[in-house]
Image (cartoon, rainbow, N blue to C red):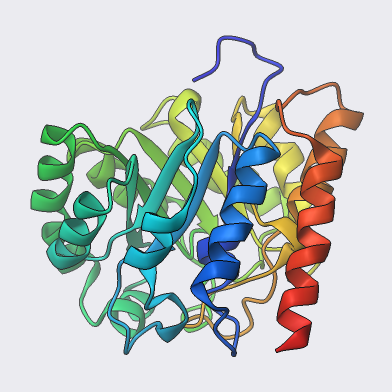
Length: 288
């Protein structure tokens, strides 16, 4: 956690969450250039890729190649998503600074996303989290579908808090509360985040919103009011979850940066460089 209460940490997710839902995979060298551009813009944490089955997410089948190709900057954390032990081994071999494990607040989404129950998914992550921490790798836990599920609809704040507590107890240092399909409202965001903040300190909470219905910035305003100072965003607003119907569009990093600046917050990121990168990324995707 940054000491300055007006500093917000942006976690740039375009290379992973942004690209995993694109119908046409980008070549590895373009992904490497994307990460390098985001590093040069000063993004403090970049979610680079995901060590998942190439059958499940073919868009990120080149994870090891991309991790080997990026130019690492001192002080920037390069993280990857790891759904299981094999994914963790890939992350460790690729020298990831951090890993992300994910549990859903919805049983149906858990089954459709990773083919197991919430309890089974959390049990699967325990040895991964322990091994990562022993290896000096940071661990973040994500709670998917925290504000609504494409299959079950409304999710109770208690369900979100329960998964948060489990992830915290197994050793996750940061908990990301994810509005995976972008259905959250300000009222719902407040209810869920207040339930989460009863089990974890605001300094350890990250907010992940999709702008599916154009409400991401309003919901982030609520998070900032509650003391949350870590936000996921995607350059160019690209991405979504291939296992969540309707989950188009992470909130755009350039929009979040403008929003934060207008409210007196700082991020240490060059907004112009991120906007140029977002446009460049959209151009790369359009060409394919």
